[in-house]
Amino acid sequence: MSKVISVIRGRGFLATMAMAVVFAGVIFLSLSQAGAADAQAKNAYLERRSKIQTTDADALYKLARWVWQKHPNDVDLLKNAKMDLREAMKIAPGHSRAKLLLRRVVAKIKIIESKAAAASPGRASGPGVSDKYLLSHRDILWIRLMEYKPERDKRVSIKFTNRALKRYCDSMRGSVEDNWDKIGKEKQFYKMPPWKRLAEILRNRPDDIELLQDIHITRDPRFMVEFRSKVWPVVKLQCGNANCHGGPKPAGGLKLFTTASKNEKVDYTNFIILSGFRKGGRAIIDRQKVEDSLLLQYGLNAKVSKRPHPQVGGADIRPAFMSTRSAPYRNIRRWITSLEGPMAPNYRLTYKPPFGMKLNTSGLPDMPPEPVETKNAESITNSP
Image (cartoon, rainbow, N blue to C red; front, side):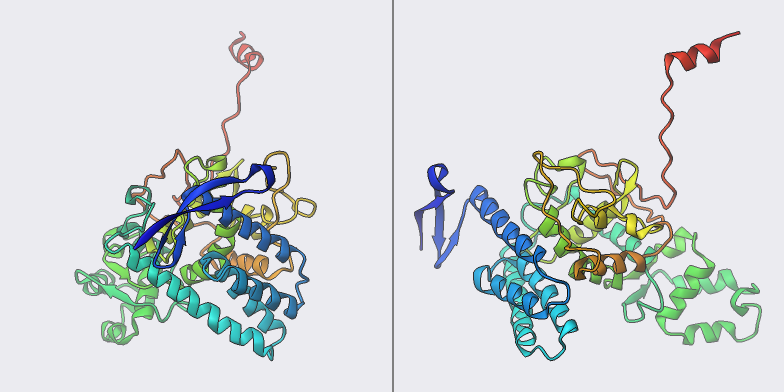
């Protein structure tokens, strides 16, 4: 049974009446209300977070407890609280309250995401995101393969289809590389664990598209696990709201996609957008000069950033990182450093970025802009 109620929104003379629906005891606000409340909660969190010293475990615990008490159903804030609690436990390993709260937060995140997934069965990309804006499953398989690191990703599930292993062996037989000219090499190859076989294939056949497309990594490599758990929660909190890069008219031409629950296509699409997007010729994720990544510089306070985020409404944005010593900053810097490099690989994508975005996913360096010819230069060129 549902009923309609009135909800006050706003402050002072600007307060307005809006409609909300109560179903099974849960209040569902309109999109405009939910967006306003969501932004207010996230701003409050960021303001509190910016005042905490990087070595203060108790303060990090209290911030996470504030999220737990005031916003127990906000999955984005809960994910940031999870990171705060883990950082608190690194600083003070014996912090029993942080350990207990972390268990509760992790359990609550799982419950919220499970309910969100169950609420939209059969939808590949979740509510509010059309598949036409997202990567295909084939593109995701290419990204996993190109970002795969054997020593780091030993436990991922690898599927060799269409007799890929036999085709590789046939192509290598007699070669001096990896001792394929020796008797017994093929038998030795088949005895290798899957991650070692894939490492050798990538080493010896990095450009054999017909072979590589038949090798499927069916579970997320480490780079995506860490993107989803350590990078995206910070980015989504700072940049993913409707008034920034998550709305229908994305700021600066950069569009990010958000869903309430874990979503493979959305996660990989956001990764490839952040990896390939350029702003003024500078990379959001710079694998060669990690500290210059706009993902890091734009999150710092404008007074300490080498390349501060453009002002919004004539004012600096609230920083995502207290300093270069803060845990979120160090987590993201470490994650960028761990990526395949120094250039991003050629992912061989068929993806066509929406909203007019231009992404470099070719694995090639960015071309400098062509010089602008002036009339004087033209007259000099054409002069006898």
